[in-house]
Length: 405
Image 1: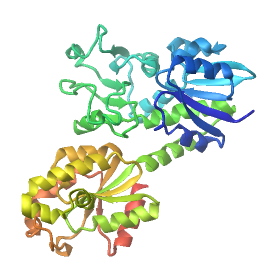
Image 2: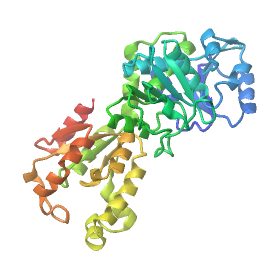
Image 3: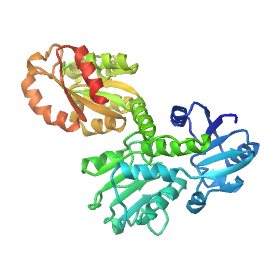
Image 4: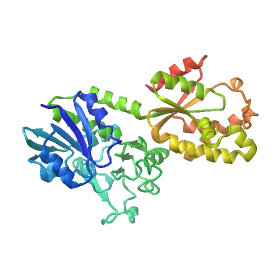
């Protein structure tokens, strides 16, 4: 066996599949970005691989070039895994298993419930089948079908929404495929995209206290099943969970919020160094872009001008992966900032006693107690984790790392 595996698709440079697969088995895995169906046909006919994963837009295309298709993949009408067995190509669908695991993660039982699936591509077919096999009333929402985005009010009684469209992925992460207003029976919302970790759709669902899951779980667990087919060996649940946890830590940003001078930059810098991550301070980014310190901007042009510059930097830096970010004390006052930071980050509220805060060169911090009263609810609401400062920045940083797991 060559141990030669990979992923075929279009625009796949962002894919995490090589890291995930080599975490399961130490085989060679590469990306093959193919521009059209002719290139797909040439790749499959060359048979210069032991196994391939398939992603958009070729999950249906590959089926006509295979020698055998598993009953499940045939039933679904979509193949995302191909195994070369002595020159014969066998097709499977492991997206089905990845979505099964996602349903488990959100503790959602679809039996006798209306479930909306947004999109009609290859991934949609797998999701639809998994839900139907569990007794769901599945409705496919497409742009031009009988059930479309123009008549969603017919389905306000849905219990689950699954987004299988690319709407909400980077770089258009400020978009949602639909509004959740009116869907008052929702129990869960799933977005199978994983860039960003939490799409705008998921963040809106979280605000409504609805259970959510992004696409990383589905990605890891479909990869697990594919890797088992490639190697002919089982992978334990514990190993798969370990890989998923490692991938979240790899991609996720750690974002520090809190009062001015609470130690966000100092602690954040230590955390970044200990974890081998890049560190960014949005106040410094504003200064690099504008040429003036935040205090100079506020004194000369007012707070709004500074906040606008800050928001622009936050929206850019929040698209980073695996970074540590410190934001200004007032960044949480704008919901758009918090939403942008949450898409790929966990927000750590650094809570330090007011008598330890200083206001030098901070025109908005002259009255610390008043400022804290104005902002404390914003910090509490935005935070994913709240950390009380320890005796030293080093100790605080260690506690943050321990708390993140």
